[in-house]
Length: 583
Image (cartoon, rainbow, N blue to C red; front, side, top):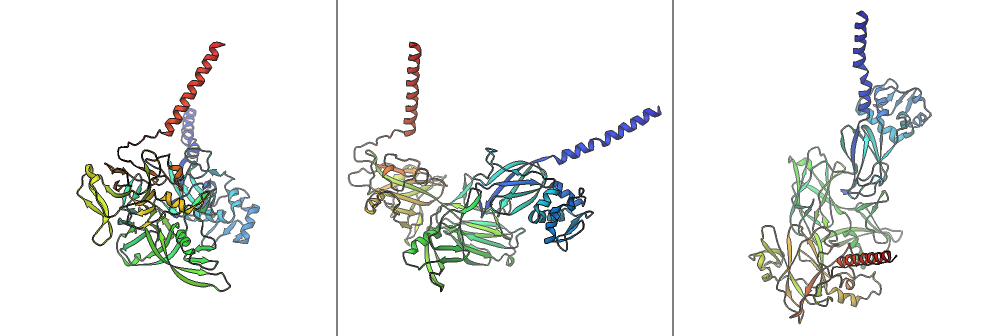
């Protein structure tokens, strides 16, 4: 009986303690599904390669002060002697940060040691980590594409524990503890999950939109923020901030990802360099340079920086009210160094809106906080003969809009000769009766605040001829700064001689890609539009008819191609059938 009791006791003990290593192994082998975002200056970056290495093994050794035999005597430790104090198996990284055999550390200090080792002596750290492999992250659609997507996202399933993420763009790295089944990691210089900055512009399909001139207000929570700066896009005007501030010129170029690194989206004019608030010109300034400089400034991400004094207020939020404009003027100090002596002078440069995305960029304590931008969209039109499908000139139009409630507005001058959206008593069924003193005609770029400019010439085309291009441009016009919130309409206000007045209006809506994707095009006239570029710059056709004529319907080229393919397949099938039958 005694032996049986002993056996039962031993079995109980084994049952209690033997499963523990398996349970520990299970914890150590748990994984996290990681989504890593790379944002730079508030923008998602494509093509950045992200590598992750789990350093949990090294971390536990550093924290516990327990190392394997001879690890602290490894030859890679010699590299520390050039930078830090090494005394036997104790390494002093600073007055307050020491690690080594028998030295137990807090989690915070262990992380700090891990960061120093990764930065200054990665070979030694890899020895401590027993040479764990790097894991490349990939896009969600294809594990073979090991870089970030257009949304700045790459993913991987990684072991839980302390992990270091590094990217292909620079030498920076992030030390992050993974301990949940799903983890989100933010790399680059932008925090996309902090701040919760809002703007009261209408949100449609995940982006915010407003007409040019429409007032919008940003709301920035101040929780855990000790300093606040705002970068302002070239054509966003600040109307009010609920705190004292100072502003200065500060140039920021917009970047994109290319082959794993950041590159500038737009080139600068020759002999021009921008560095912070400095505009340098390494040649003699001439007046004809001015337009080129203005165009270059319009393509920057921001031109102005605002430093907000948040310590003088007790508010929980900073509010910034502003609006998008067609043009904005900037006094720019230009440093000219075409000779040994540098010359400084100031020019008033007028920047025309060349980007449908405008707004502010919030920087809190040196880090960008994800900030929504305001889209004021663009759309292009070509006037055509609806019967012959040739370019047509001489027509004029009135622009109107209506919202979801059906309220109609007409773009018109007010009593002070300012352009406004004038409320109309028209119902949607009577839009053709709309009237306005503000009309739209060919060879114009028209912004909704009333600013107009002539269509630019395309000097890159073969056999460039300014007079011929002016003639073709007379059939075109471009609308700039429209919100995705409304339905717009064009009402014919004047028709070319010999043509009939339209009995209805042309309805249309806009989106972020309206400039690059026509909603109702005419492919027969596209060859006569000199700046047309499929998928980048497309035109919607406004068909105008002569008295008694009807519009000729254009065959859809996609249906024509499909019919051709089907007929070809049928012919081949019949021939094959006859050959087989004859054989």
